[in-house]
Image 1 (cartoon, rainbow, N blue to C red):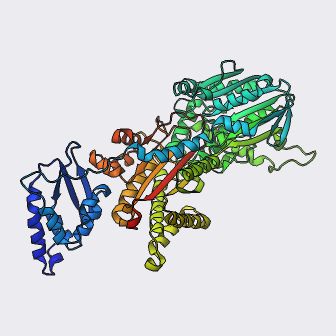
Image 2 (tube, rainbow, N blue to C red; image 1 turned 60 degrees about the vertical axis):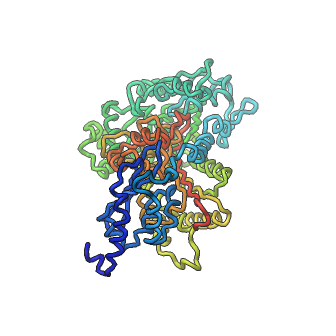
Image 3 (cartoon, one colour; image 1 turned 135 degrees about the vertical axis):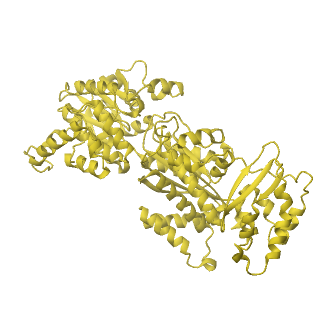
Length: 638
């Protein structure tokens, strides 16, 4: 330590320490500001009684001796929360600091200052508004009305025409099919004969309690509702529903029209394992896959090979009836061979792919023996089959039984992200959709959005004549490009940010997709809450390293459009530039909650739940939505 002060300026250190000494000893005040750190890095901790915002400064004197040589006064200013920084703006040098501190009496109460801003939910209103608008754009009634048209007893859908003559059957499975079924009944009620939908346990009760009865079937419905899949896992109730649906569709003839409604959660609501695999074994396999980072694509690929109705099985069972499949996409890039494990789409994947997934995740020993044996036998049979080609005229192949099927995407994440972008523009922000297909580990994506926020802040503050070629900007562009953002997206974001500066507006970045969480802890949470928490921690670290970020108000939301993030009653969560400060105020270590995968507990308790997003079940599901808002606090500071 002594080597730091070999420049013979010890008198400055002594002078500053002697000035601060009375304040260090005066610890009885209501508000104590503690600064501590290592070398040139400072962290902060605020503890205060909200009934008395009197100020007292408490410095670690030994640390101060180390820090003073490194322009301590300037670092002090930017270590303070932004809302209290006005107090330190005059502190240009040591003498100014002495002058300000001498203005406080060591025997009387220090002068009052404004308290750190306690952010209300109102500050997050724009984010919540944008998220709710995205959900509204993909509600069932709107989607079905766009997809189906009835004129003169003729049904028009997906470019095809079907003659209606009281010959329609309806089946459905998924979190959103109740609302979809109601919309179909509103248009085709007189032609519907019978039907079955498999929906989550207590969905009807929950929707009515939330005042969303319009997303449930009417009392005079012709459709039977079967509930199951508690905890979003296949169970005996959903298996019974699958058996009932199979029995119904196998009874149809070529004069019948079968409308199949599919949405997210459909896989768990239509489980029919191939013997000798049991439902319990499949449920255990699903849990193992989820806990080891398997993507939704991985899980659906496996289900297509170990279940009877997945991988085109439902369409085969319904042959020769005409099948119209109305699909609400909950997978990246709307791959119809993946959505709900593709019950009406011809499957070209192989059983060997399932075995390869087990190997990649290193879970071969955790897979039930019946599953391994079944897949091995199936892979041997598959190898003997001729190559799969679409049928030529007069030539019969497995494709032949799919000429009666029309699959139509009625809603997807792209629709939701576009609606979110448009709403952000209406709120006075300049907005851009950077992706509708984000994938990856939730924490990594949260950190990615920190980099996006940094990129916007640097671009907002960038002046070629002053900054020249910014190394930081180049590094950020490379990181974003490595994650998968195309050059055009980065160029558009660059242009949008410069336009925002000229227009004196904030920037809103919208994205969509679906991430995964590799569970290591015993906590409670979901991928969206985990992403928001990782963003908050990353943003705090970035603000300590990059002073420019403190000139911006930054907030981020990630939420599931179905209203359910993991096994919780939350859709997601919000993080902003005050999140970690509030954790510190309440004596909470955010990193500990993140490591324990316990984001729900933190967000539920923090600031009376101001950061958690709860919508209740929405009646739709098109994966997740993220929105990042970056606003300059004061353009004069830029």
